Length: 323
Image (tube, rainbow, N blue to C red; front, side, top):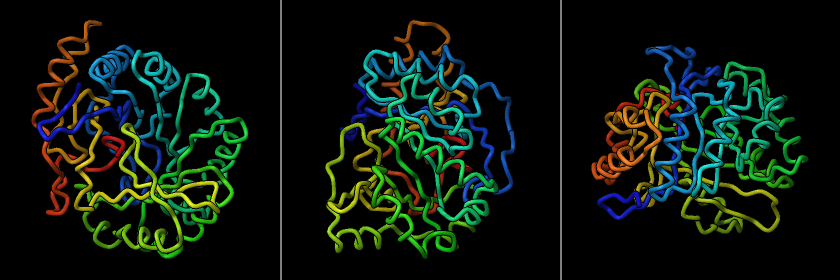
């Protein structure tokens, strides 16, 4: 079992398959993707071995991330390989949704269990201003179509930003009134490249939490493979609201996830000082050496990130690891 020196168990792997992204989100890649290395991303064989090694050590859930993972044409095969791995109960995907309309059925057929779509505004002009892409209508239609096709495990990720969406949260509450969608507000996190933007735009999620509690929203019990969101439900709403607040003092106490980058590095935290090379252990189908090294490397995981001190580690932008 993957367990650190603080007793935390790791049931959840966030697996990046590319760091390329075709959006220009203001808080992540405002100048677009800048390639700083050879694009020798994990192969399908290596992805399969990562999944198998983690599963043998108790991991039950894999989330495929990027960059934008749908930029890889073999994404359905990657989903299928993870889903077919013994011990992996849930395969999830995080996407910006740019080609979701044409591709989501292929993802479903490959065995995808859950889908997260990044939408920071429901206003088409604001969405385009944030992302650099006029794709909101297509993405919203794709979500509706997926729901109609019976795909129920859909979440929307919304990064809170003071000037872009922090002033009108009611549009998000209205959206989940009649849709079985989990919408999660994510506090803007400081990374190596966005210090000034963070200082200008950061909004705490605490005031939303207070608003939820005052208005009768009930906190839900978090499953062992769940992400870091505090999820709230209300009897008058089909959907739910989640809060991801990385600056909360107890945020790291329930950490249950590890990260592998698209270049084959293990990241013990989103804000680790460095990625730990593991790709050399993924070159044969025998994953025992890979597993032994995972267990050993995990013993160096720290009790908490250091975001409160303005230390963001090696994470220059979220596209490096998919958040």
